Length: 245
Length: 245
Image (cartoon, rainbow over all chains, first blue to last red; front, side):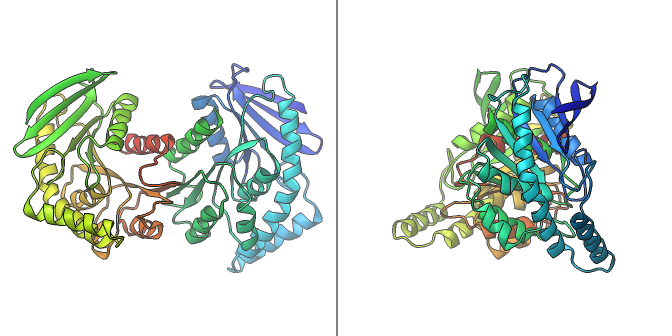
């Protein structure tokens, strides 16, 4: 893991890094040895490691609760090259959107492909983060994600025992994702945008119901996926505080 | 309003009061002029103004966020006499429970009767509270309730413009309640116990959907009505903080 930039403002240290082909960013309290939990944050499809909602959530976790938060660009996203397969999938989604067709089946397929590639990258990133003296292996680890980041989290948690809790929300749901969710047994916090133009609320409820966890929490808010009320952002942080301390 | 007892512990002043036939309790920060919001708290059917869950929530609101919280015994509950009608309704519910029949239709009917009587009592209580110099009319007012307290809140909010936000959860739902919920236009926070033996989660979702408010939040948690996780209790408080400040 090589740090490629470092900046500090409002009590938060932001460091970008590379790890092989992976590009990422790490936010931590300015007082480096915080001892707080580590949160891995997975962005939406089409976005990147510094998506505005992701950054807002990360800064809140760091400043209000002393977390360290890491985000990486998913394969084909942000600062990373797109493969021919990525280009074709993105073109197909754009074309469907422009011609008024449902993008859901295409997004579901592409999300799964990207998430499968992202799982070993998150594991390698976690190895490298835990090798940093200021993080180490004692900090408990949570994972949060939206959309594509939800699919990644659902595939990651069952194969990565270091993930102790998940906070997810807003994703297209198909039978494969419902089946995968059944394998998630760590505590889950799931968020549904109640009035999103694209995401069906009943599919979100079915996904919440499918999680294999016995400790799970569903939060729905009026408005769309990106209209997250402040109190909901803090609820997610408090869910992690309760489960990672 | 006559105060009948006063005790202070852990920074919280607890005062019981009577107002005509109404018996109630008021919790406030020890430093009396807190200037914080006023929360009216409606207990479950069969419970009373000091139901354990209600008290836990009230103390959290006072100590963590500087609220003043008031609770009153519903008609026929707590320190108040039961009418013949109350006795008959309670006997019928007990009988149904003992013989393994569904209690839902009986509870729905009795809740509605009690809530209709409770609405003017809450309004009179609010008048008296606002006449106290340490509360006054500038503090914004919210209402929280479970079960019977949900029905009361849904009937109260549309006729009482001083109520600026509702936090409710866990109730038997019928068509009359769905229709009443459509008249609620203030922000609503609604909580569903996902695995309750008696409360149907889909009825809870239908009620959430029925609220006429444009700003609404649904929280569901694993477990039963009375197994509220700590982070959920705090979410309700933060919902009020966001809407009453």
